[in-house]
Image (cartoon, helix red, strand yellow):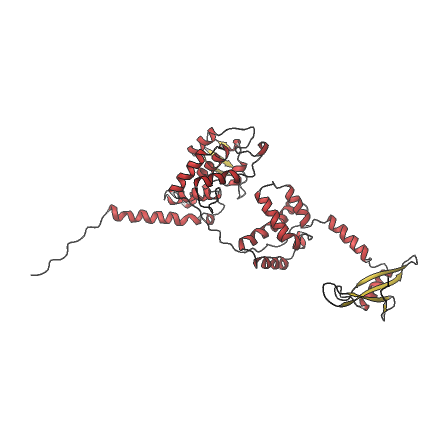
Length: 379
């Protein structure tokens, strides 16, 4: 094999060889240094490439001097040190693996895994949360926005934020030092069911063979509780004597109490108790993490629209029915839905306003205006 020619420079102990340019066409110079270590052993090391490392003979000579004086590590030592640091550092990749271990194998976890692998890993995986700059995260957001919907971009950025917060909460490392800017998303979709659709749904629930999922949907409809809250609901959380349901660790963070109405009380008292502390237990009596398959069967049997979300849609239906009744004010509805702020409840305000307008128009029918007789024409 023919040796690649050494080319001298004007600097002692510095030479270069010519090689193929990385990432492009053409040739570039690859600089090397030669020196003796403290034991008198001759050492030849690569200093760097002309273009990719921005290396020059002068810089290579400086590196040679620092190596002789013991002020600089070799390239191999630097790589080994970086590898060691990488193994011990709490990178986002490493935090993500810990995060996944503590999350159940449900639909949300699988979606998060896809988002992480598809969008986050390549850009931020090898970095620590505290090393991220606002500029690079903003650049990441803008890049995602060129091919993803605002809601999806927001989900991806929320995932990055959750990973960082998880690291801080578990004392792994410092988190992101700034507030991550996310796209504004209009999330005012409000689902409702017509009287015929409601009748079909109740009929489908009544005839469904799986009482767990059937009662799950009924309780969701008659309480407006979130899916996650029903997954966590335990028998100990239902106070039959005082007529309340205790919602532990809701979306808003603070534990809440909502009334136990007679319909839900009857459902609960007739619901089969399994060997579990949970009312709607999952596998082996543990907390349930998924119920989509069964509730979608009920949705299909009821002939509901394809875009109707069978669980979150019931929460919207609950709120819409109460708001449009004209008998429930927005403050009360906010408390029943355990919304953290009144702004979240305002999406239903127009239903109340329409009901009030219809009530106001009734006055015309209840007190008909007496029509005056036309004036007599003079003879």
